[in-house]
Image (cartoon, rainbow, N blue to C red; front, side, top):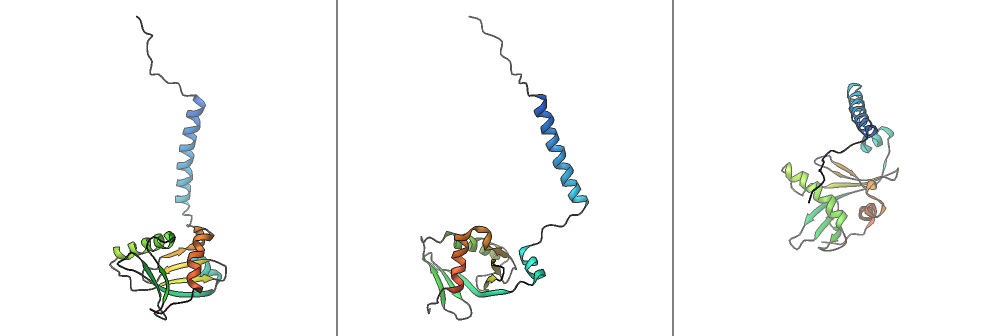
Length: 162
């Protein structure tokens, strides 16, 4: 029994190699040009609002506290009342996810959960959550209308006494 010779040679079309090389070279060239021309980064939404003097429509200072049973208590700092109680296992993954990221940043800086967060609805329709200690701001509109609505509800939700 004779077997045919086996070859590992693969022919790549010359045009494909030229295009791949062109993509690599053009990517490096564009990146270098941006760096050399010192193109400024895009302005943050907070800076754009400040420049355009966009006023807040509604603001609420909130404190988020984890309970031992896994629930999250959202407290209105001004009144001391509960703005919302997010029970463990409830359909509140977006609030938990946003706050987990902000809490992680605070822990890295040695900050506890006592300082408030500012939830602000702006005249241009944007909704932001700002950490009053770190200055980090999250633009909630960028996460879609359903997720935005979970935080917008915190601006108008009636409070319950503690």
